Image 1 (spheres, rainbow, N blue to C red):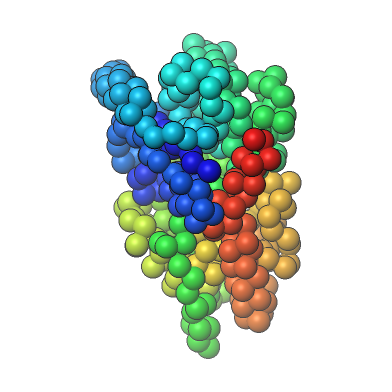
Image 2: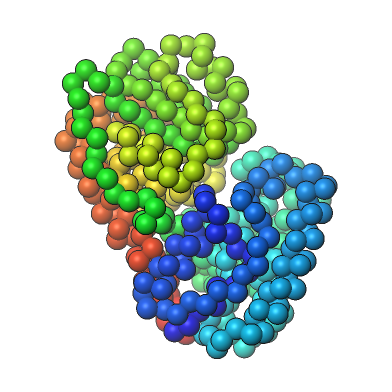
Length: 376
């Protein structure tokens, strides 16, 4: 089978999904040809979070040039069976469908809804506003143009099918996974007597992540030998830093951008990694990158319980799951791992095994290949 990976998709650090699918398909024996134009630069989401008229116009210019380049490159592409539109491909898929018609089937790597993210998750656009309506139209148009839409969880598949009135069968789950060439498994750090348990969180300070719950749990544990490191920036950072500084919580904040290599080192030195604890509806539908990152390196994970997380992990067997927004439950789970190093070691091993079986590029590539063969 030959697949054409098409679009202005990003290959930047922090956005592994396209690389994982590309490399995974190749490991599964698929020939992957790439037809790509650079448009987005280093940070895709930053453009939308800090959008100005000048930046948007500049991006629109790059997008127009990119679409022209893609049309030329695709005309020269070798024969192939499927077209895979890389993330973010909401405009690329419209071009691809126009170029291809119905001669070949198209898969869209989606994983997020632009309107759902901007309105419900980040509050960057008001419900019913012109921006929200345009983003909703773009979502629906992109999803309808694809023969298959890859979503990161079945929960998202259910949600998008209902939200945009699209056949549920069009949405196929493909975990986001992680690049196991970068995030390599490492032994769990030894627990030295009288040394603190090291707890790590990394991510942006948006409501989905529920970092206020982590801060409250750290305050609850401030008199115990447990150190927290929080890596990230944006959103609620200043407010939460101030709350932490008013307490005696043992929290170190790192707001500088961290490269993948630096992030891997932070994960490797941690005894426990935290997922998300937000109470938003989207938080119940995702398995975030940070969970795959920690499992890939072999670190015990504590994250919020949800229907989505249970698509991959089991409480007490491959991770510890807490009620959303419950700081006391999170503190209790951290204490449990502090008191029971053997449990931490079991979660480390079993969590990594789940990653290899379901979240590694090889596993994701095999799964997608099977889906394409079934559809064909």
